[in-house]
Image 1 (cartoon, helix red, strand yellow):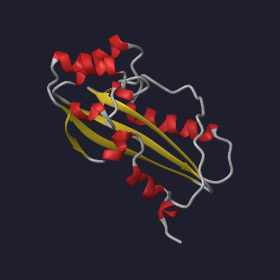
Image 2 (image 1 turned 60 degrees about the horizontal axis):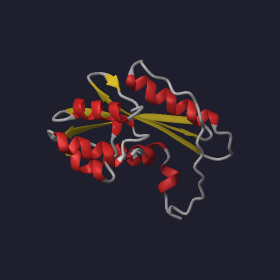
Image 3 (image 1 turned 180 degrees about the vertical axis):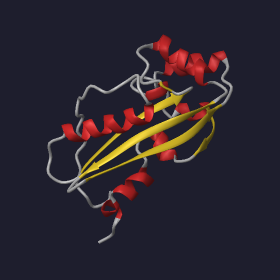
Image 4 (image 1 turned 135 degrees about the vertical axis):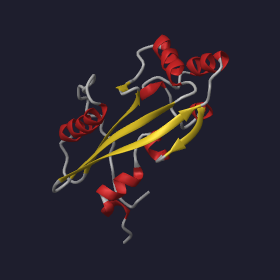
Length: 164
């Protein structure tokens, strides 16, 4: 891949919830980065789905996953990611992407919940596989919706994308 060695570390921090979603995703990313004790560059990201000014978080069970699909069906929502890069200094940024869901039929919602892709996913969906069928259009960074805003990462840590 980029000619750089990397390791994925799950920091296990207690994430903030219930406040301003923009502040939360940035602060959650900051806490994740700080929890990783490593030499070199540390990259941490926190992503959430926001509708009506409220961050949804990850559904706890099938009933909540269905509730999220009901809420998102036929309307727009934002995917917010806070990204923090720790090295010699901290660099951070926020990425916002608008996602518009199609109007979903009852059978589609039921199939998606049964498929189980919602587990562990902010907003109760993942765009990488079956969740892509729920989406009418995306305005902004697709990589942000997947979970890592690559364009923002290139801006905050250009050395990762330099050749040679």
